[in-house]
Amino acid sequence: MPHYVAIIEDADPDAVSLWFTDLPGCISGGDDVDEALENAPEALALYAQDLIADGRQLPPPRTLAELEADPEVAGELGKHKVVQIEWPVRTDGRVRTVRRTRRTLDSSGPNSP
Image 1 (spheres, rainbow, N blue to C red):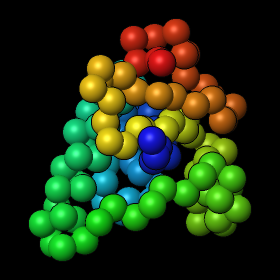
Image 2: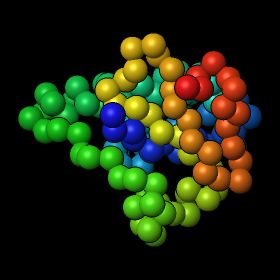
Image 3: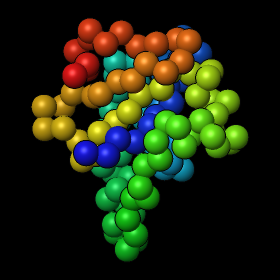
Image 4: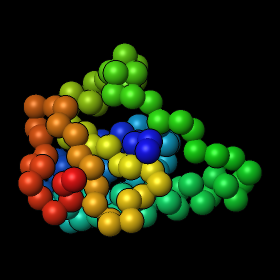
């Protein structure tokens, strides 16, 4: 199954935002990282719905290596937490996380595979 790379920005102590590198305008958020991750599959599904309603399709996701080679994205990958959101969404509601930056997610939490 394809996975879309998302960036988690948690510099604000009151909110966390998550955005998809390959899907401009597709964002999620929450009070903390876990909530932003819980909301991410729904944001991705709504984004896909809007594209389909406009007669378009989701673009294919790029790999982490492809994103690291993209100067517009590479800097963000090094500054923030990076996760991969499976598409279509897993039926068990879990989110696959990937450790790629200095600041990493704990894979033992409820959203780990």
